[in-house]
Image (cartoon, rainbow over all chains, first blue to last red; front, side):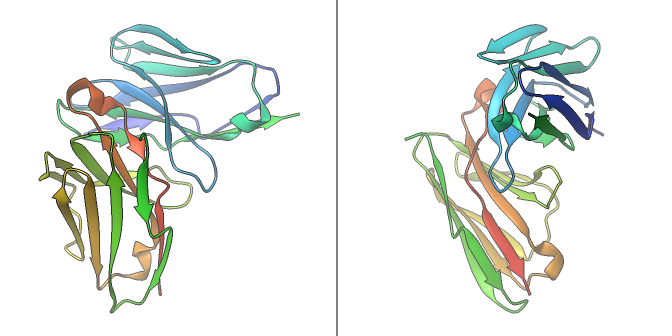
Length: 110
Length: 114
């Protein structure tokens, strides 16, 4: 089977740094991705890690450790507009099956 | 063009109706997906088409019938739905290979079944 675990909610203040963790268990592994979804909107791709290490895209960074089946999304200089749900997702075969974690609801306070 | 376009945005249907959801992309992506999302839940994979052939069917009830007329279009035909099928239906597309790790989603079709 396959499962992904991430915290259900995180709260932080504007300007702070927040880390959203994701652990996964899959029969195969072809990459860990992160998506952002605002209320009423569609998921938007943020970042992808296929190999161990850190990927940086502006204020967002994502990390992967394949030996630990673990990754995280790091959001820096938080802004109110970052309040959204964040999903980690794994592609567990060489095909097209991408499975999403339950999502982490991020609340950014002034 | 870097968008996936879904129509209609909202759909209300009775349990005996037949309706269709439509999805279009012009990014040259050869994989197209249907996901279902309930409120405060993650997207759940329903179907994947690769090169216009059905690649994945996640044991979806037959009242949902996908169709891929060409490489740019994806339809989801709906018939005899149940109220519990009310959800946001998301279409997505991607490249093949490693590109399949990056899904581009449409805005979704919000379906209400009465």
